[in-house]
Length: 263
Image (cartoon, rainbow, N blue to C red; front, side, top):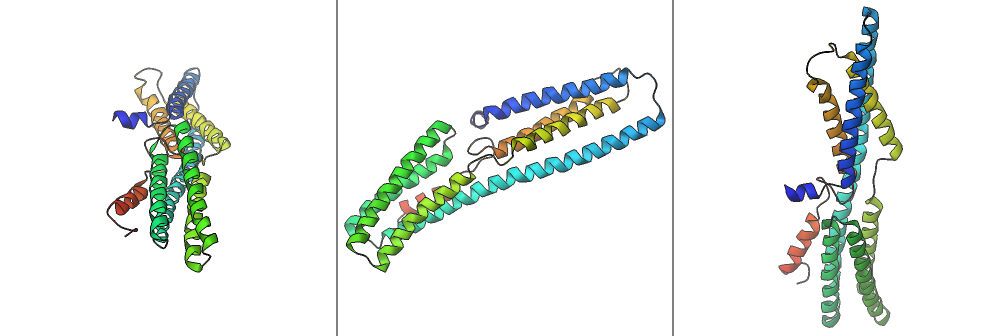
């Protein structure tokens, strides 16, 4: 549980606290505004219910739409990790086409590269992740230099397949980096929070009775804040309770360790 809480982005905690506080204040403001109205007309109450229902419906649709953005970004990062595993596996296989001396050197470089890519997905610290990425690019460059030197000395279709495999490593990593960003624009967050504030104000305004417990009026702000918190967690790349795990890359490492792909 402690490691799970540590994985949550600090901005998500701030977002949770700020949204819950803001929505609670909006709900209490709505209830206070209702309390100042001593006379209520039945027609006005009916109109209020229509406005509240329409606002909540639009807010629910907006939450679903924004959630689909976040899930789409998470799925894209998952697919990118899978593509990297496939590219590295293919590179291990193509390395067996080299002569014995170069094959051992290429396998060693690929194993180091694989470890760095796994570390990239596992680390939660952004500066450390950037450092790991730079190291993996350097390892990739060394791999390309090795294969290109062999290709210059022995230009044939067999070596060309090894060159293509090394080039696929770069392509797969670039696809990962293109998906390594927030998918939800700031404008979408602003509209979502605005709808949340309006909805909770109308809910507080619609609650009858100036006396009694305030637990009920805090229920919707709490549920809304938790929902937006989870959306923010899904949208954060490489952090949070819901983030991409390098399961496919680990599977490649286990396969190579047991003699697969290189035997």
